[in-house]
Image (cartoon, rainbow, N blue to C red; front, side, top):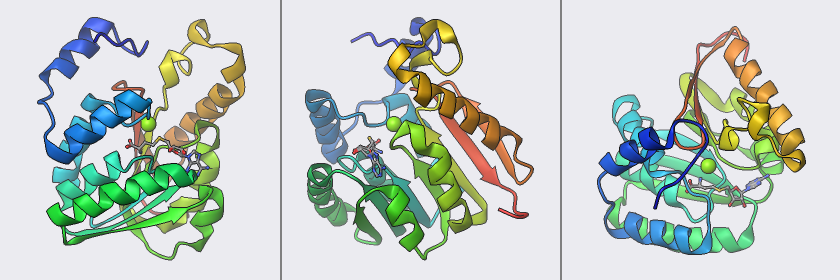
Length: 223
Ligand code: SAH
Ligand code: MG
């Protein structure tokens, strides 16, 4: 199926996607479920990027905002081999499906503990006490700045924040694709990207893969 993200030329996107090997087992199952029920899991070339990223960064503690069916968290656990993941989800229905996913995952990765938190991330984040090597922000796009403000103090110096969907269907980079009902979300996302790109204690790069991914390194300092 040809997909148009409106972020890079479709021929580039589809070619890169075509090079990603087919998933197996649990991952294959979850991809099918996501497609059937329209769950917005990370796109395959983003999953592939994160696999490589996890192999080189080797985080031991991960925080995820937006569990959905547990696909991305499972990918993290699979690559980490051991460590801990905290993952937050607002929807009870999603969290229940993710619980089944994590049950299956625990057979493959018994040395990674996954703790699910149910609720709005803005209410859950202040309760967290762990420090993380990596934080994955993949929930309500209009609230990334609020999520960031709450989770930056929980990120270790030298840790990274990965923000998904930051180019949101091409709308963030150009008004040409902007639809009216998304104006607020898009304006907030532009502000968020400017913030993480210019903060003196952070170093950010934005990748035009999938729906846009920002990688932010915490240098230390005041945040
Ligand atoms: N990370 C997942 C996909 C997440 S989709 C993956 O790639 O496999 C985004 C999820 O964020 C949805 O399940 C949605 O219910 C959840 N969400 C939306 N707003 C939220 C909030 N304020 N707090 C926590 N979760 C939220
Ligand atoms: Mg996403």
